[in-house]
Length: 224
Image 1 (cartoon, rainbow, N blue to C red):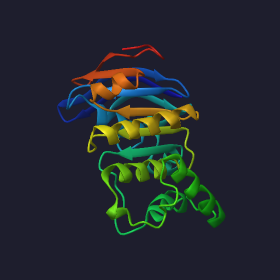
Image 2: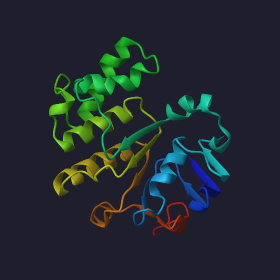
Image 3: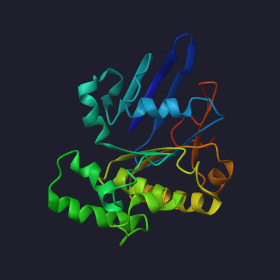
């Protein structure tokens, strides 16, 4: 599903990622972990095309994304859901409208929007909250909406960048339970986090980065 070969990402004289090679199998759930500044977010940005590698090769679903031009990025991102730490919701729009946007931008039919939005809100435990303004939700509820928006297109890959970073312990556990449930439905899930407690509670392979170098977890389904 995801193959990286000797990937380097440099910003001027600084290497944010150094010679990263890793395989993530279809249907796997994997953590990207390491100390602050280790390169976790940079790696995710490369995967969803916000940044291009300075060198190396990246295959996602057999497509060499390291060579994609900007016009091809929408096609890449239709095969991915992306969840951020700060939710990135439109607070004056309703829960349903925030989720529906991901379908509307790809030109989905109105009937598909009506069917899919309640279905994914049910997955994240927010069925019946479609008309609530997003701005009045709790942090945990906002992250659930963000997850619903990320999976409403039924993408084969879900990327999450510190999805529990702004949540308290109980809410963080609930979000990880949702991530686990999505993975069990067959979605490949990559979660960037430094929360050791959550990784211990939900044990999956850990790709550990230190100073931009992958130091553990490079082999497919190998434990860190």
